[in-house]
Length: 443
Image (cartoon, rainbow, N blue to C red; front, side, top):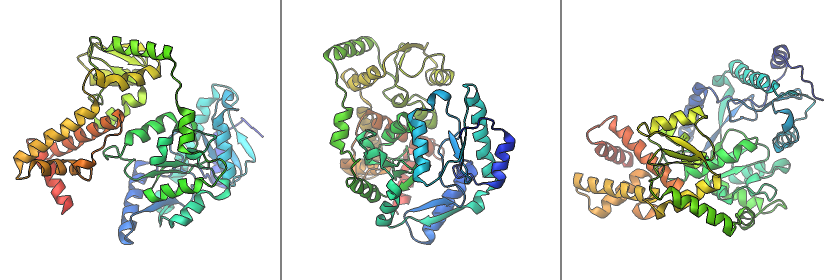
């Protein structure tokens, strides 16, 4: 079934005589912005809180800019997996997606030689570009209301579709069930708040899951759904034989740490903190978007006060990362040392034994902000704490709850981002500007 003689003539013929069902019409920024405004207008017009953007042409919005495959309505499949990946889980998932969606594969174009991968990647990118040009997003995209909860659940589980994030065959971390659902047919749903790094929701968990787990799956562009819809999906999943409870999942993922491993890991951490301070207890000193991308929770590294960088993911030969770190710490002579990923995780778990944790820093930031607000207004200390918490996105001061150090780093980053935005209008007193916006929004 495989034919490797793919060329631009074949692709152009496919584009003219068939329909590509797998490109993402929202990839161009103008299309994404148009869809956002279209959705807002629709929800305002019909007084809805949730709706969803659809395409008249594309049936699976692949999330990355360079997708691994494209499927055409005439049964043609083009993918760029390397030869040694042919029996890998990725190919199995891709075929499963097509099967669940009822798409029959009649012919396949795929590389046989390792160097072919670059050529096929270019072909896939070209297909996406041509489809977005051919199908104007202004006429192709439309909005519809989110179905009722019952219909939504029924739709998601149709045709034997499996909820991968609750399947005993996947054993994905159970924490992801709090905020997302990933299905075997490529559907990917996220609860509102977890898709915004400036929210108090634990965006770091979602970002970590996406970074470590998502590359192994074929999935559509994410859609935001209400929390009760997500809860209903997991309740429905309990009825199936493939369902795994959180307890089962946690038991299977729990690391069995040997005494020998723990001794070595503790010695590693003790030596690191003997005469150094960890600087990446907060995000690196970069623009917020860059700082998020360089999060130590995504790339498993730690920068110390003497310039030592212990890292599992990269070293000085990984130029984009090394350059970003040198921008963040220009006064340090950075030198890299490789370490197991588990050691880096253990390092951050023990960090509060040696210096202020990110959680402590975040709470201190809010308290200091409350003291400044109290001096600036007629609020009492308790009222100022509640207002500061609400300005950050919490219900009140008592609702402030930091789940872990990555979450605390995210919250600190969000606070810095809010301050930077306020300084654009009021450089002398950004807190006054934040408070003004808060009162305006509450009114």
